[in-house]
Length: 460
RNA sequence: GGCCCGGUGGCAGAGUGGUUAUGCAGAGGACUGCAAAUCCUUGCACGUCGGUUCGAUUCCGGCCCGGGCCUCCA
Image (cartoon, rainbow, N blue to C red):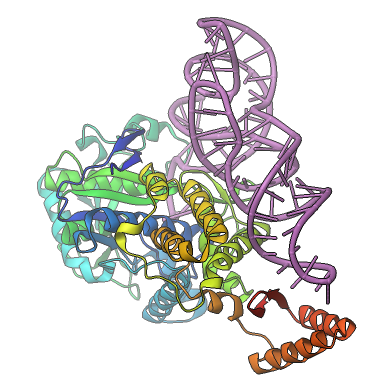
């Protein structure tokens, strides 16, 4: 089954072929750990999680290496530490833990390798030395800068020439730059700032070099897929690519560059600086299940802008109710989906540039089939539904848990006692009492459903 | 100024040179003591003006509108 993805480098959809099908390699830019992840940050995590699952399905679990870094050295972390009067390690460690919790809640698999910037300072220094030796970087006032004019085809990815950059009004030219487009590889650290000894004095790395160093360390000089949010195309990925190619003397850094679109709020990009963001943590605390957030994030195509709001989350919740509802009648006898059972329609949708909305519609079709299926057909239908959902990272818990899980002031024994009471009333044809019990429960968030096998309940 | 995305029914959101997306919401029906869930039926679309074509929501061009990037960003 051929995979094809839209490649930012060529601005075309291209069929995907890994350099080595035994070892498919993907790098995705991870979080800078200074604050909770907002849903804009969560989008690439979920999108590339689906890609990871798809690649593992196609090439085999053992043949895909997914690297996603943790940026734990950055000036924003310094600022946060100052503001909150906390140590840097305290901030990076607690933020990393919170990130893991939140992304686990979204059903994202952990990457194969999750390298930290602070663990790769030596590799960064070595790479910078290499760039200086090769004439692609120079030292000035304790800084090391990448020389943009030293690279003839700089700007390939973002389609921006060095001249465009220099013409741009927002380029701030530090006095030590030889060329306005040059960017920092290493900068000096003041007393009290984190720093590492280097040939250029005590300092810390610039923003882009860490990804170049970590991807080379864990994936090699060239690899298959490099992913991230659209806002990383320039300058981050452009500069990463420049560093890596110049240091290694390669034609390509990654062969396929994939970028997800923004999460927007009322049509505007969600961002820290605009202050219009919702954190995953916040939504979870409001009672939105991580799976609901995940489905919402997959409800649009990954390259399109996606508006996430409470209406969309409510709709995602009802979609999940429907999907889990189709599985519910199978009770304990849910089949264990195998790799072969993955429905073709869903696989085709994902294979075509990760068309998750189309894949979700396939899921709904399967749920519909399951709802209509005879008892003998049910197992097969359920298996297909579960196998498809697994590829999207959905429907991974027992349906009863989906419907009955959650916290509130009613315990299960109490609910079941009231249901028994109502059953007795119904048997006595005392429908007034029966309906009163049902209404009372509904007011407390418990919805009763009378089926052929008796009454079942769920939390709304 | 340069570069780049979008505009689909009440809402969300795929897709296609001719024919059902899908989900939510709406209408009617089946089932039910009544509901809920489910099933059946059903209405409602492609910003605008041109061009190409037997035929354009789809391809091309202009225009209008919205958004993004141009060294904080996922």
